[in-house]
Length: 146
Image 1 (cartoon, rainbow, N blue to C red):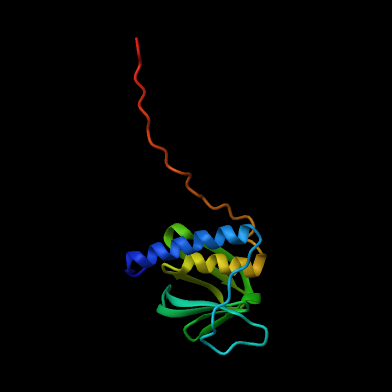
Image 2 (image 1 turned 60 degrees about the horizontal axis):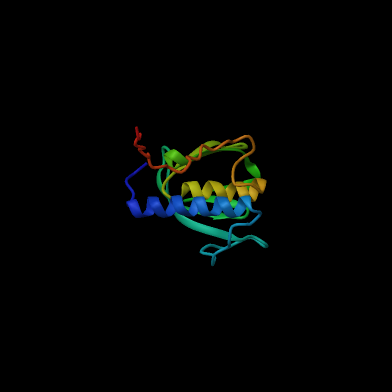
C-alpha cells in the first residue's frame, strides 16, 4: 500500500468499526449524493482512492450494485467471494469471469463492510471470523501486607 496520511488511516478504521456495529444491529450503509450516473434504483455509498494490485492508484466508487475501480466495473452480482484483511487495509474480490482483484487503502476496510452489507446483509462474509482485539487493561500491582 502506498503512503497515506495517518489521519486517513484513523478515519477509515473508525468508519469501518462504526459501520460494522451498525450493520450488526440491523442497520444499512447510508447513501451519499451521487458523483456518477446511477442505474435505476441504485444508490452510491462513497468514493475514494484505492491502490489496485498490479494496476496502481485508482478512484473507487461503491454503489448498491457495482464497484467501480477507475475504468473497470465489477457488478456485485458477479462477486463470488470476498476476503477482507483489515489489518493490511486490504480486500480481495473473486469475480465470475474476471478473476481476482485486490484493493488496499485507508478506506478499504469500510468498503469491505459496505460490500458485505449489500451482498450478505452482514458486516463480514459468511464463515469469516474477524480477530477483534479486546480492551487493554492496566496492570495492577497489589502490595502484600504481612
